[in-house]
Amino acid sequence: MPLHAPRSQRGKPAHETVLASPGRSASRLRNALSLAYESAGPKLIIYAVLDLVSGVVPVAVGWLTKMALDRLSGQAPAHTLMAVAVGLAAIGVVQGVVPHVITYLQGEVDRATGTLAQGRLFSAVTRFVGLGPFEDPTLLDKLRMAKQSGRTAPGMVVKGSLGVVRAGITISGFLASLIALAPLMAAFVLVFALPVLAAEIVLSRGRAHMLWRISPRERREMFFDHLLSDVDAAKEVRLFGTGSFLLGRMQDERRAADAERRRVDRHELAAQSLLALLAALVSGAGLVWAIHAARFGTLTLGDIAIFIVAVAGVQMSVAQLATNLAQAHQALVLFGHYQEVSTAGPDLERPERPPTLPALREGIELRGVWFRYSEDQPWILKGVDLMIPQGQSLALVGLNGAGKSTLVKLLCRFYDPTRGAILWDGVDIRDVDPDELRLRTSAVYQDFMHYDLTARENVALGDLTALDDQPRVTAAARRAGVHEKIADLPQGYDTLITRTFFGGTEEDTAETGVLFSGGQAQRLALARALVRERRDLLILDEPSSGLDAEAEYEIHTRIREFQRGRTSLLISHRLGSLRDADRIVVLSEGRIVEEGDHGALMAQGGAYARLFALQASGYTGELVPPSVEGAAL
Image (tube, rainbow, N blue to C red; front, side):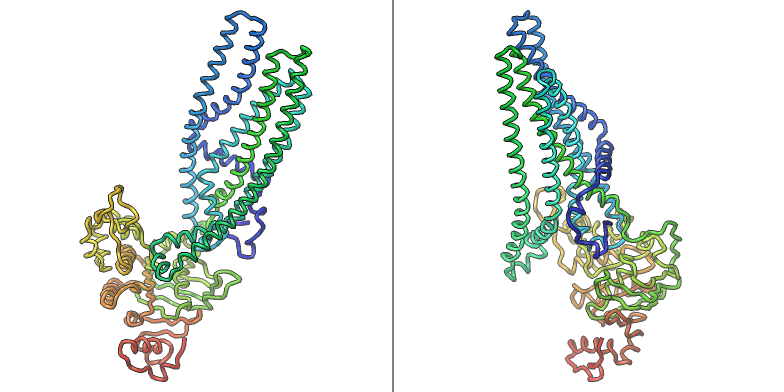
């Protein structure tokens, strides 16, 4: 299934999503190991060598123990016993030191791999051209699991793969020992290993299924968690007394997810208990046989020791092999989400050889534009034909849901029209590089962002070339009417506009961060748009919605000055701020129903005149004329 699949393809069974063919698993294994080697090659090699060498140690300990017992029972010379003792002591040192070195190297590989994986994952996310993937629940689940598995899955794959090989080495050594002593017992122990491996693989697949099934519940749990701990939601939660309700919803999701986990845990408990019982029966049968053979002189005291160690070692190593194989398999399944997101192409097509986007000379045209967000959703725009002439200001008016913000998204190419085209001086914007298109555009959105950064960074994020250009940052802040506020802050433009971080210090004082009001934060967002000088298109979507009347007047005066001679699109529900636009377009239910300047539209007495009169009556107290009152959007 493609990463950003149509809704008709979503909601498929979990096993279709998480299971992988052997070929795909092999590909994931190669990619995971390649990622680990690329991030920490030398350390990975040393880690692998030490880990594999540790697989030989238990076999060596068993044989040295056998040699010591045989020599003791046979009264061998002291120097031979000393050699065996030195060998056991040396191996003891290896057993004591090497695991700590392996743990350190494993941590180093995990950290390096996690950093590289994180960078690649979010580099892939930034390659998404539009907003569609971020509104796709399937993608959001995959992205959340990709973030988790990207940090841990490569390390788990390395650890599991090395564990499988290490256990294989140990099993081979002990089986060789058993074959030398009792071939039939060796075959019996080997056959027993097969159901252990099969059971562990089945259990790992079941756990991977479970993790995918509960992913939507975990996402909803995170949503309620955010509501209960976020400062923006805190006001309503406390005022309306919804905390207990939201907590209940969050815990319902947690309990449902825990029930899924519990069911899988119970299956694992039953299966692993049965396997442990079988292992105990095999060990007991082997021990009875060995003692019986020793009574008749078939086995020496050393043979019995190596036999017991070998049977226990094979069983333990088989269990470790099965566990490591299961962990590696589960990590590969989860790594599939990371691989799918990190290797995904753009959600909207990028032209292979895009033409250079010319400076805007004529204007931007919407030609027969229809749009809906998916096939099962209603049409938002219905055959819109619109021209935004170069150097002119166009105002867009309409009730909520008329399609104004959607039109803005199309102009920025966050989505492509379902039908029709948007032309930049006659060039379809789908044929140009979206990055270049956006480089020519500046915007303030209705749902503007506030960044927990310094005032300077909050402004300069509009154009990072201004980050070290204080005059440009200051000029943009002045245009947005926020310079004086910033200048009065404890550290001026270097003051953090947040109380979330303390700028590298744990001291919580006014010097470390301040909070802006909603209107002040909106001015910062406006400054961020205005710092993008010499752009061909300026989009202002409700740029003064959070301001008082005096501040709104001031801002629109500054914007008019800034707009003069620029191509701009202005959206606002406060029609008084739009009356100076060169042209006003009225949008209703996805269609343009009126068009003209303020005077012409008022003379028509249509929808615009009705809305303007209604707003004006709120200030003047005058009644709306019947002819105007009857006009509707």
